[in-house]
Length: 267
Image (cartoon, rainbow, N blue to C red):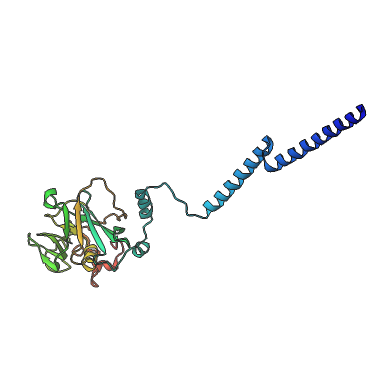
């Protein structure tokens, strides 16, 4: 009997060992053992990170740069061709004109395809009123246009564009209604307050506005000291009294402009 019991006990022990080994094997395969569980989690996390990285690389990268910084970066490398592609020229008024009275420059913004005037397109040096209050601040619109206009002080101006009462955008004054009678000393004041209230520009600049900005175009006059133009403006090359063509605006596109033979004023 003792031998029979001993055999049963041995068989039970053997069966128990086999069962334990079998259960351990199952637990390891399913990841429920301590070591197996850690490996399984590490493997899963590694796969997820890999998939996320791959998916993320296929998407556009979103930076934390502000819109102002983006505009500044874009404008520092200004390309008129690129800007032109962003403007909706089919709009009733494709452009908005902004005049900074404090810094004496004009910026023309184009309307984008979302209907916002957000595309800097042109910047021009100008002269506003020698007395601040003579050039009014506010929002105005272009009304009448004049190829030549007699001014209140008896001088003449090319490409005059009326925006409010007697306030206009126009060229630097001329002594007579003739392209060769420019008051060069007034031209040399561009970039500083000099007018009786109007906004003076070089001929090339005001002619562009005259040709491209239709009646109803908005003109905003504001004052912000220290502001830099969104598109850099080349430094004004002044006209010397001794220059043989001092009676002409160097930027005047007229075919008989004698400055066309010189390059130093062709900006």
